[in-house]
Image (cartoon, rainbow, N blue to C red; front, side, top):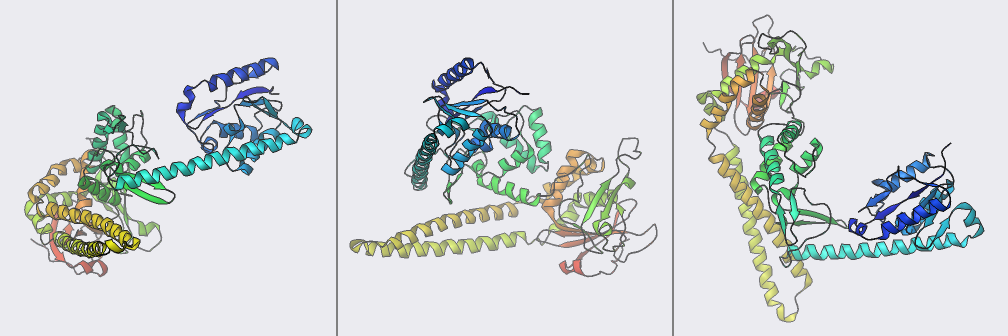
Length: 553
């Protein structure tokens, strides 16, 4: 049977408190207590919580004290054991009822709690003999909770004030609330980039835009001995959190008592605003679009490829265990497109088709400059961007007029006392104006980018990747996947042609819906991947059975 032992628990809400001598005093006290009672001071449980708040119960949810309470519940702490703490406020600063419940849990398990600061002992026997000690413990817990609650209110009030001064441009200091990014350091006067970590962030950003997933990026960072936060290994979920952080453009987001502050320019930026907006758009498009397996799909798994017969999504299946080609490639017949409507019992009769000829036709078609120009001509994306820019400029003009009118009203009312509602409305309008100016700038950047898009270079990008895609090269396929995401809104597969033809020579018809532009049909030879016919169709062709197109000789 487990023998009783003495345990020492240390907690500091601020890790800087650990530099004092209270820890040494408590350890000496616990050692003396164990020696006098012929007990062993147990150090197998790491009972030390630095920087964990007992007011917010983080020492229970995340720390050693929670581990100790779990061990008590599981019966791993022998009856007759002793827990030494500096004071009861080290155990908890929660609401008194919760704090006393935690103390009672320990005592009911036959464990004595000893406070080194005053030498008091709390166990069942003593509390029966001296019940006022229970009252005393409750008073200590009430005082500890009130102290922490008061401190919490003062700290929050100070943070509110600091944020308001920052937003008004009247103060530029460090706000100690929440965590700060690992690629930054505080110099004592300002925030500065840690060069190698900032380099890692930029590498992750650029690699993600190239079409790679988080797992690939994490491995690449590890291979190059780059770290975003200083930790040796970064998880994929942490990487995604980093790529979504406004801190990348220098903003600190704080939420205090339900109110959110966005402090612009609080940190030095790693990305420009335009780069960040582009990154968020890519992330939103690829929420469920990460390539899987050793042969990432170019057209499926990106939320845009559907069956033309039943409307269900189309999935890929690679049977890599079957006999491969002399070049160790998976044979075309073992890389298939499958309508999910078949497996889900929707009665789709389209069957399956090899994805290889479709990929070949798509890459070759988009690699041809004339075809690509035809495909992208008439693109409505620039027109839509121009419309958004015009609407944004109109809103900015209207806000400026409102601000001018309310400013005039404030000046005229200055001698009679300015109504607080005027000032509040002025601040609201200024905040709205700043937001709308940002939207105007983004719209201008978008129009500029779309207007200056170099279609020849775009066609070259497809051409450069064609051989790699057909050769099942991972990197080439991931980059081609991104081109597909950027170019097309929807891809519709008619695995046996538009009219569900039968026989070995039946074609594969692929409908390409370009973002903001045309809809183009490709008729593909299901064996060679050669495209034999093309035609422009209307967007509503997605919902009706289209007639056979004229085959071009």
